[in-house]
Length: 178
Image (cartoon, rainbow, N blue to C red; front, side, top):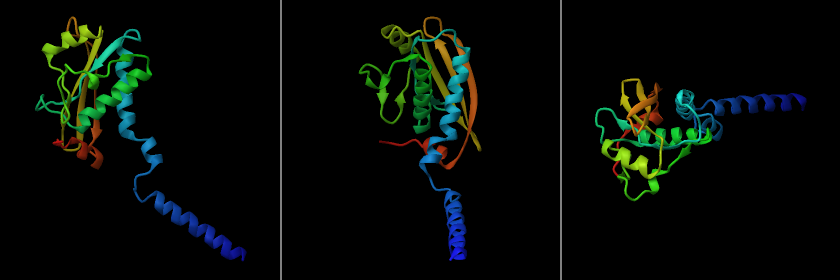
């Protein structure tokens, strides 16, 4: 009986290990997503370069460097995660999706044109705006983020980083029509 119980225990451990290594999505894997971690680390680098905390800020959707009028799920999601991290650090982030007078396209996100920058920043008394672009390489998506002071167009902080093109990232890069 003990032998059978030991065998079943070993079998159960082997089966569970096989399931864990099957590559299937899980809540545990999602909670430690390297995609989220990389975006939060990028925000942390920008925050370290910024003087003070608590300023009101805006963020634009990251755009495709080869077509500045276009974005993707990746551009919108990176912007959301950067904004979330800035909020966690005590910055006041204005949620642009609720604005009526800002260009918002469901398939492109909140793309900020330079001529709108000063007006939006003034309307919200924003001391800075986060902008960014991404370019797709063969193996990586290269991302550039900048924090800009809207009254002077001076760059206050900048960071470049890359995300490996996993299946998830590849899917987020596709431009979708909604």
